[in-house]
Length: 166
Image (cartoon, rainbow, N blue to C red; front, side):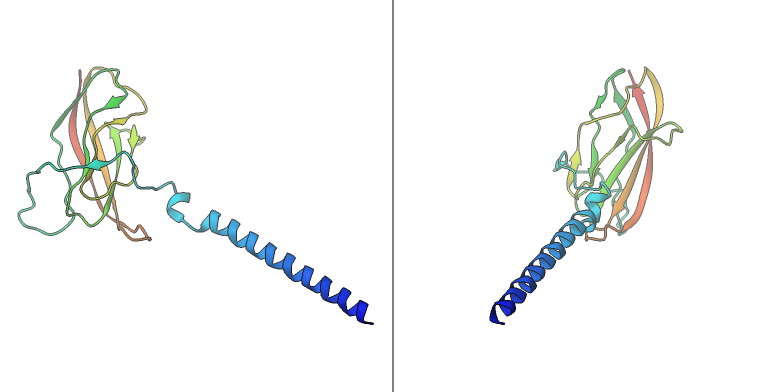
């Protein structure tokens, strides 16, 4: 009778260990698939952004809120796929910025950034297609997100500028 009791104990212990292993495996798989929504959504903090120390003209007239940089006229070379245009999230903002750049009336971005932290800027980026010589209306669509885990969307802006392609 004692051998049978040991056998049952060993079988129960084996079943409990296997069940625990299956639960741990399922939790690990679930956490990888759903644990970090920012990564599964493709939204990450840009590693291209660098510290930005230059002074900007403050045109806010002392009003509180998200600081949005302005862009006047911009110039890039015809045929270039790497543009040297500064995509800035001004220091003092309490949010991330994400840029999506479109040309004229196109809804398809030629470039989309990852999240840019306050006080940082991307100063050079690669676009999906080069432009021919001419003047274009460039749209710098800026989306703003809270800096907590929820990444809640805030008010953004569509900054228009003239793009000279020479």
